[in-house]
Image 1 (cartoon, rainbow, N blue to C red):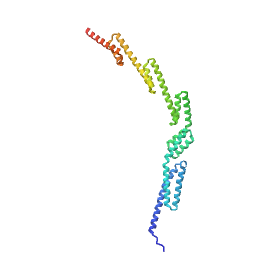
Image 2 (image 1 turned 45 degrees about the vertical axis):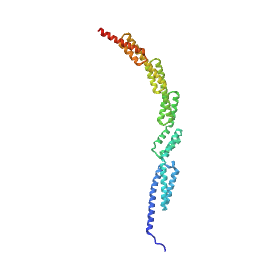
Image 3 (image 1 turned 135 degrees about the horizontal axis):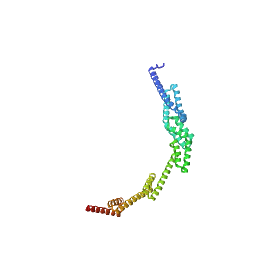
Image 4 (image 1 turned 90 degrees about the vertical axis):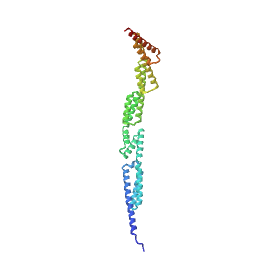
Amino acid sequence: MSEPLDINNVEVDVDKKELARLRAQTLLAQALTLSDRIRDLNPDRWTKTAFFKIEETLATGEKNYRQGQYISAQRNYRQAIKDSEALIQSIPLVIEENNLTGDLAVLNKDTTRAMLSYDLVLEIDPTNQHAKVGLNRIKSLHQISALIAEGAYYEKLGKLETAVMKYTAARTLDPVNPEAESALQRIKFQQRNQKYQESMSLGFSALKMQTFSKAKRLFEAAQNYNDSPAVQQALQQAENGLLNAELVGLINQGHGASENENWEQAEFFYKQAAKRDSGLVEIAILSTNAKKRWALDKELERVLS
């Protein structure tokens, strides 16, 4: 005789199975949301094998679900969720690697490879600014190459201003182009050196002509381009020349005042010269003598008045 059916146990088993089914449905919904997200990112272009594996896992889960094997289905869906999340987390790295590949291809003038790399990035992330800039660089690559070639031609001829215009135009089209940037820096150095040499040459000519103020201005201009020991020495020569010219002027004015017996003026000019150069002992003596003569004249005026 068979044992009587335990209704309570049957109800418990039914409840467990229903809960397992509902849990499987929840996991399936989560897995499908993630897989749909990946599908929108054109996975066939960058992760075909991994995404195919996820779809296979989902298909196995659905098969188990239809057969009432809800616990097995849950395991399948959890695995699909795990794999999908890992794939989504890898997207930033995929984008970075393809942008880098595109950049290197541009440097090597491999426009086809560069375009494929940037296009792939934009299929994953249509707003990616790096890839957009990269594609624009490719489109203008031939024009950039022509501008750089023209710049090099004019640079070789010594027409640096025209060369700068060409290189600048190339850099405008491609702000990170290393050839254009390197050329501009090179010419900038050449121009600075050229202006330095010109200012130094004109400064020495002014020294020779004893136009010391002009020489100083020119050496200061050269110093703006290259504060070299040579320009510092030249500046010192110009300043010494200015000082000597000023001293000669003051001494001559002192002599002139002495000849006219204007001892007040003579003392003033000699004193100013002695202040500027403490080594002018004779001038200091002349200043002292002029001061004494001036004092004597004032005393005579007082007595005679």
